[in-house]
Image (tube, rainbow, N blue to C red):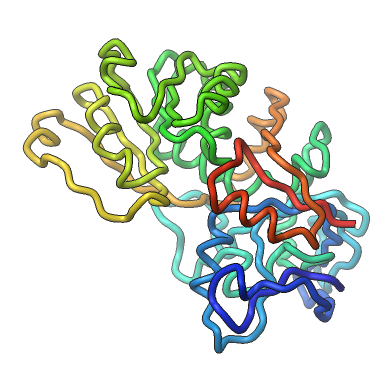
Length: 330
């Protein structure tokens, strides 16, 4: 089968589109013929985490397709079922944190940027009928990350003021959609006027320039909840917008891992800071119910054939996208 494979050198330079052996499902596993796969920032990080001396690795964490083979003992799904890939391996029920041994499809195991993938049967989840293949293919990792951060960790409620810095990413667009479905008032930031305008079209109550004075641009409106996925570039500004007793949930650091903030102001403000990452299979099921209830559609930015992976990786590396980048797989 054809696949996007990383080997030999760090970064995008180590990627090739080539033949790889197609897998067969063992007991408890299924093989999915992939129709679409979603590109995530994680895939950029994997290109440096996967070492040059390690065996060739098919990358990619998100995908959707049709089951074409099942291993012994599989009863939850069958050949012909249309499914999305739950990329989280070994995290079934909701818990405070992932269990020991939790991994994500695409490193250390082969991923979704290929014509097929073999996964545990429990990680093949029936595709919502109202979604296209492209929409289903980008759903799991980013949407699940958004769902856990917003609902499980952030405890979003109707009427809350929610701030989402950096609205261009796939997770951020899911956060916007989910928060609006929950009845929150949603405020977003971006340096791009086009992205701010698109966010308003998607339901944001206000979109401000990331380079502006946030307090002034928001008319000193304080936030009940901030979902922070940018990192050092915006963290202090995000913290300054919290009301006393408010909560900031952080799950991303694409703009820097280390931040400095005023500890005295933090405890005087009675703030809550929570970390989050990915989510459980149970949360994925809850998220799909939400998506089906409100007939939500992932925001698709661009669709590329798998052999045009370089253009796709360049686009996400430059943060040019709004929403999700998709690989269409024949």
